Structures are given as structure tokens and as C-alpha cells.
Amino acid sequence: MVLRHRKSLDVIPDLKLENVWEVCTQKPSSRSDENHRIAYERLQSLDVETREGILSDLLQIETDSMRQNDRLRYIRKKIMGLVDIQNSERNTQPSPEQGGISGHGRSNDPDERNRKRSIAVCDLEIAVLRAYTRNKYGDGRRNDWFSMYTYLSETFYGRMSTGQPGFSVPRFIFEGKTMDATEENFQICRKKCIDAYVGHEFDIPSDNSNRLLKLWRKIRSKPVWRKLIS
Image (tube, rainbow, N blue to C red; front, top):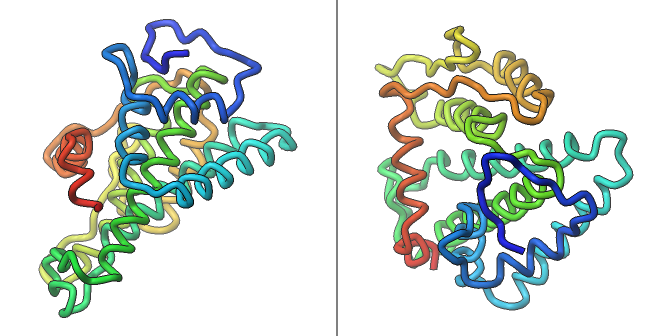
């Protein structure tokens, strides 16, 4: 099985998450999609025990989803939670010992290493779950709910970085409307993302406010990322 992008998503209804995991442990080919490449790269930095723990967590999500009336919606919520953990960790202000407010913590600081490890593990779990739902449910087109929610979450949790005198309150651009990145607005937009039908495309903001998102996606796709989290 090759995890790859297709114009028409052919689903595999009886696909098992463990099958996706097995594919992700194999070196990607030129036909492999981004989720496969990200998962494989993150796996290289983890020991066997950590890998087994992550797989166990993912299999539990799959098992729990089978008990739900809306299985895909359940997994989407889990993915959203992982995205939020990542963005919360990225925007956590380090202590002076970790590098002050610059965010460049020392590589030998255990808290900073754990923070980077947490982000990397979330990245891996998201990639595997996205590959699973894409191939099982056809849920994985460009500019879908996940792309929209990634933007929303990064903006919302980015308030921690800009919540200082002299900075304006961050704003979302959602469905053509501009709104303050408040908890209430975040939850309203979150629900619309999770309820979006498979194949729905959102208008993802592409102006200067989204430059950091683009930069981050570019950075994390490069092999040097593994060195940063090791």
C-alpha cells in the first residue's frame, strides 16, 4: 500500500490503522504523500519503547472510534487536540534559564528537550491519523478542515506570544469574516471545522498574517528537523 495524494480519493473501508503504521515505518518513495514522509522522519528519532507506546495510543483511538456513531468526527477531535497541544507548547514562554522570551532554549535543558519531543510526537501522531482517515474515509483534501483548523489554532495559541503591551489582539479570518481570536470565537470556528463534510474546501488566509504558518510547514518538511528534535 502506498500512501499518496490522488485527485479522486479511493477509500479502503476495511483499512486498519496498524497497516498504515507499518507503511509509515518504511522509507517513503517518490509517490508517497506528505503524511508518510513526516511520520517516517519523526519515527527515526524515537527509540523502540517510545514507538510502541505511540502505536498503542493510536490503536486505542482507532478502537474507541469504532464505538462511536460518527467515527470520523471522533478522530478529527483527537487530531484537533494534538494540534492544540503542539501550538500550546510552541507558544509557551521559556524561563530565563531556557533562553528568555526569545524562545531559543538551550539544547541541554531537559524542559526544552521535552517540549520539542512533545511537539515531534504530536506531529507523528497527526501524520499517521491523517493518513489513516484519508485512506479509510477519503478525508484529506487540500484546504480541508485540518488546514483551516491548523491556522485557527496557531492564531489562537499565538496570543501567548503577542499578549504584551504594544501588540494588537490576533484575529481570525474565517469564512470571509474577520474576528478577534477569543475563546468564544475559537470554539465557534472549531465546531464548524469538525462538522465540515468530507471534501469541503475552506478559503485559507494567505496574507502576511499566515507567513509564519507557511514558514513552519516549509521547515518541518526538511531533513534538518530531525536534528532539531534530537
